[in-house]
Length: 194
Image 1: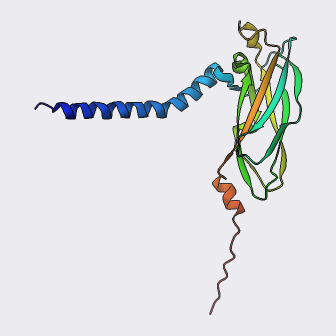
Image 2: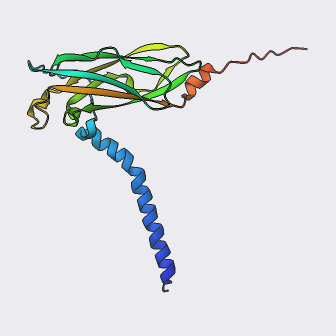
Image 3: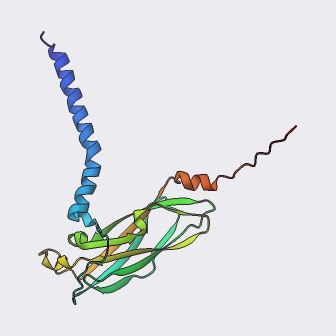
């Protein structure tokens, strides 16, 4: 049984649209995975623990903070810069403040500049790994624990890096269900026995 040329064309177009949709859907997780594996675009690594090797060579780490357009918090690094030996574990703090009269949830995105150093900047612990909820008027100091991987000195593009800038941008997200439930007043139901 022969297929009508118009039907064949429609089926091919539907196939193309479905394929493009699937590729678009898969592109974000694939790109995220690619950036984490390669350090492309200043994406950092996550480490289980310290580097193990500490070199005598030092590197300066600068800290930057910004907010997405509609994020009502105040957000800043508690220190602007620190000097560490390559491989040495460092800890820095960022401060967030919610000046509003309602709870606000946020998530931090991050990157490292120069991009060539992104794959060598490893975080052991970071406030950016989880969403943050600040109550009205709440001010918190949030740590990030990190090191610069000694393998940076073997990279022809990154080995001459004298400083790395770690940047965070907080953006507002919906309140998580557990936070919303904790803020909802409980009604006291009384029963009467007759």
